[in-house]
Every structure is written in structure tokens, then in C-alpha cells.
Length: 216
Image (tube, rainbow, N blue to C red; front, side, top):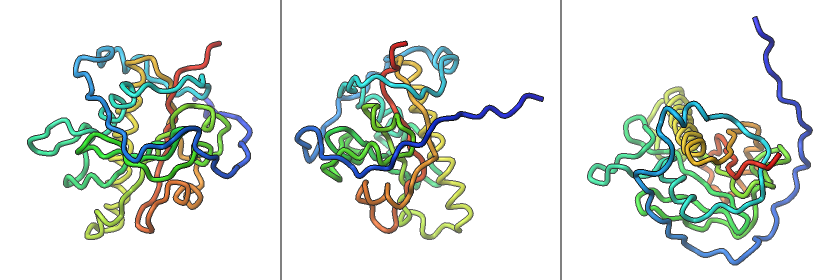
């Protein structure tokens, strides 16, 4: 039996969010994803891994658009179906995008970003020191009002499954395009909810860092 692998690093000090590094647009239209982009699925699966060191290279808008579409975009416009499964078609997980120039929410139906907070809140998305250095942190948020009629145990299970599927979609896109990523559960839910300007019925579940791998 092998020993459980432990990842040791010092937690970064939890600092207040910083002013946005540039002007924050109210809406950001995202380019359409290329259906023939990236490496084949089996190649992406072979390359998938977690990375915790990042270059400070910004994410290009084309790449961001493809990444978010892969995460949970609408892939069947005629039915409103998404790239990630969702129990009963609730689609109760929102993706929040923390960039240096602001916090945005991804709107899959319109494939654009909506400004939530004119601040650089990347360092609020987790305790690890790399979260504020990477160009992009995604936060997966449960919209509780969408599932009020669901029993609590099913609500938690369904949300966990949906968030996990979105995380894997992002991980496979990153592997196919040579990007680095890691999924993170070590977050301060209350402070992060404030940084993202969430409502009382919205709960951050997981975060995921994305960027170019640091040169060694």
C-alpha cells in the first residue's frame, strides 16, 4: 500500500482584494469556440494533471471564450443543452471569472461575461500563494434559488456532480491546449462570496486556477 501523497505549501496571507488593473467593461462578448480546436480526447486525458506554478501571461480572449464554452457552454442551442451535465436540467452552477481587471459571471446562453465587481479578487479565491499570480481563477457557485424544491441531500449531491463535471471539462480543455490548471477546495466561503458580490442564496463550492505553466 502506498502512502497518501501530501502537498505541502505555506498558506498565503489573506489580503483584501486589489483595485482592478485596467478599466472593467460592463459586458465582454466572447468569441465562438472552434469545434475542431485542441488535441484529441485521448491525448488530453493522457496529459491531464494538476499544476501549481504559473506564468503571469494573460489569457487571450479567444482562449477564454473557448475555455468557458468547454466548461459549461451551450452546445445544443435547439434544446439549451450544455457541455456539462446537470440533474433535471437545473443548470444551477454559475461560473465566476476572476481576472486582474474585474470579477465577471459567465452567461452561457449569450456566451458573454457580465461584470460583478470592479476589483482584482484573484487572491480571495483561495489561500494558496499562486492564486493571485495566475491570470485567471474560476469559481463555481451554486445558485440555491434554482433548486429550492429539491430535497437538501439531493441538492448537495447534484451540485457536487455538476461542479465536478465542469471542473473536468476545464481540465481537459487545458490539457488539450497546453494550459496549466488545478482545482481547489481550500477557500474561505464567506469572504469569497463577498468578493464575488454574491446574493444570500448563492454559495461558492470550488475554485479552479488556469494559466500558462511557469518555465522551469
